[in-house]
Image (tube, rainbow, N blue to C red; front, side):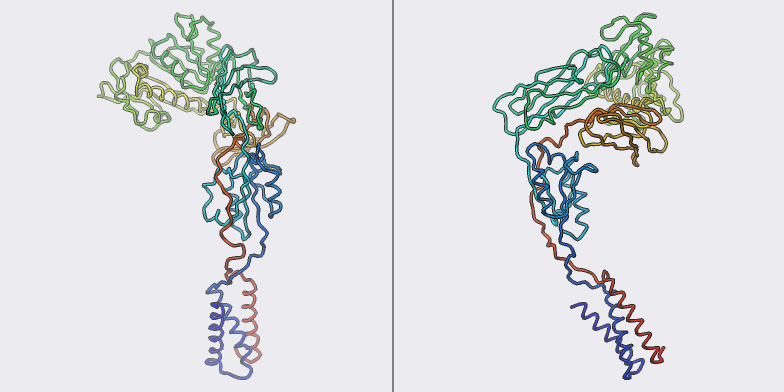
Length: 598
């Protein structure tokens, strides 16, 4: 109705313009009609009126959840696929490129639903209802979509939900692996006895019993001496034994253990002090890497911290040279200078560096890489340092701690950090920090936090063994990507990579995003990667996935609220209307020329 009114008003105005301004004759009606049509078209376009429309295509878009959970035990992938094909145009959401089965490592549908709803076709979602990002789907977008949920059936299952342990070991170390199992499905009527074993190929490293309690949970610790194996990466498979359930793919987890000739963190004290003793104990508590300490109890005589077993100086030098982080007390001499450690922690308190004695109260001067560990702590109320050595920070150094004698006088830096790009270094010029740990309470927690944050920063230096990219996690779940982080400084650039694993050798390229990260998705198995320009390592892709485990149902079946044929179409979308207007004005001009009018 509104369109008709606009057209009639515009046409009447056009005819009146001829009637009043041009004069009327028997032939003037032709240009007047053309002007009326043209003015009507212009009026419609200016008002941009609209009219009811019917969608051109009623063929639905079917978004089929193609995550691994759709093919787990009890799931209904075949029925879902059949329903999707019978409903409309099928689009698999989450499937790996080129895969037509349910192969996605995550159940995420929000982006796919939003994209499909941007068109003018009905949207149907078919899923098992276990969607990770259901809360990220706007309600109006979801309301316009039809959801069909085919939930998986409840089946009894026992899964290894967690496997953890020290992944870097040296000969003579003890292997410790903690595992946690969870039963799903009907609750057990009584505790259930299972077993767990860690093996490399056909060789079993460790075994332990595992008992599921009445709640269906069980924990076990596999502990034993490191077998006589060659240095390098070893991919262990930790497996539940005796489970015999319908979903065997969640009964095994992978773990990469790297055996190195020397530990990752080496502490050398010449001579040992209370400071070195407390620091070594704290390092063993907070560090994920193997820690070993060497003490020069007499000039030229070295002992291993812990059992005080005598060791040759050559072993100490080799450990210091190959350590990831080298911590030194006193004057270790040439063994420290030849170290290739990417992190150096130097404690200057010794006879060679006599400190100024007194009660030196400490404070955190400004935000630094280690200040977060002491945030909110009353550091100046902790036990004071007993002596300090003069430190002169450079222009690019950061100051982690400063000290004042008796809370008065000049503020002096006593903890200085420096990052040269290849080596990170922390120099400590204070003695008596061990008393923080000895007192207990908040000061002990502050000491542990300071040690942990310092170690984290030191280990964050460039690792020459990893090349220009560093693998963040050596073990990834099936269908999830292995993530590399740029480690080459400056601007990230693509790196060719060669991978050797199940099925042979393949080549790929790491392309880094704005955050300096690149992703690589691989089939299950153990893969050895080599980066162009240096750097190599091992990636273990598990058969396990969190998708195999029953999850919370976050979507339910529902019908779309909006109707497929509804909606209005604005006249500016009618391309023919623009042509009609142009033809009308051209016809008016031609008719006026024939009548001798301008």
